[in-house]
Image 1 (cartoon, helix red, strand yellow):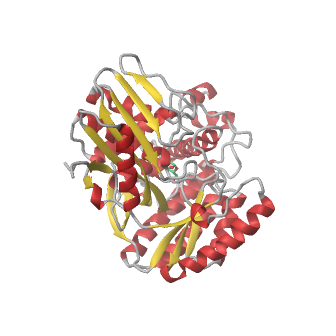
Image 2: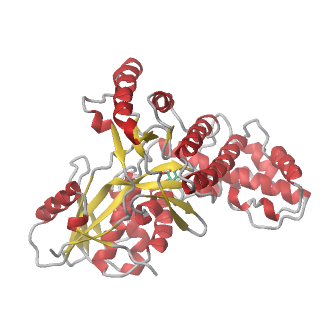
Image 3: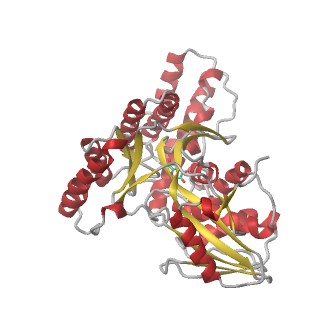
Length: 470
Ligand code: GLA
């Protein structure tokens, strides 16, 4: 079993160490043990919306993070506060059943970790202060970093040892507490990121493989300035995708069962394992084509094809978590397009793995471009702003550009030759932030500081405890 790593304060980037010291000062002198933790956000290089389908992803942990300090208080109350005044303090009474805060409240991410770990840890009261430099609602996984940091605070306060791989699996499930039906990428990369490396992550069961980034390229992130909150209305749009994918998997399985002995249980798209289907490849393709017709499907059509009632689909497939039910989309379920994106993206991750193994940055860049096109055309998760930023990033000299994260706003990621980064940023600043946005979206203020909306990141180490003994 491996354990969650410990970092010395000196080993942290100066900005991070300074923030931790400031938080400790705010916590004040106390005779009780104090702990500090950090959990990075992530930027996904390729493999978007593949994780919950059982296919791999390839993110890096970012050099921006959520950090927290905590001190035991005894008793049965947990108090959490945030150095960002937009997030008010929250109090949790451990003697009562956990109840969520209002939808979208930051405290729910702490509750997600507590709800998952409480039975094992039996936590006692403490006070914790959270802080971070990850832009929120930007597709950089600030919410999962908050869940991971919360879990480490709870674990640190209870003094138990826990395997990061096992914790990542549990926290992926835990986050469904807030109602999103996401996969396991964000928690896994935050916990298991490797400095200087991208991580290829496979799921069910979770496993990781570190891959060196090509030495002469940099990862540049640009914020489209369109907020992409995981909560609010965006949750309907996000959760719609995993649901459409599950429906696609069910339709394919039903059709296969009609045509051949395909007894395997199919829960997600990766379970449609071609190597175990006793038919020639072309025949499998025909079956999949007839199962997923190009036209969007209504709930009634799906129910009929699957031999189920609409009510049972609403209660199971359309309700992936206790806090969420999908309204059947007005434009119908787009099962064929979603399927095409997911299997194409899974193949691109395989090719991207080979590109990194051979240090071929140009090949990775081309795969990123193709990924963006597929996210836009088949998965329907891009926006005009993201498309423009991707196009302008390519014109400014990137080797490959794409939206990153869940989509619907947030950030783009660009693979830029190291010696081009300065020019790249100057060009994108002029073309997107100074020309396109003021012309098309004057409501989205960018300010005057390019570093607030565009930044380079190396691959950081995953989450851990910060040793406070000097
Ligand atoms: C969100 C989810 C992840 C993943 C991405 C899209 O970040 O939390 O599990 O599905 O979207 O790749």
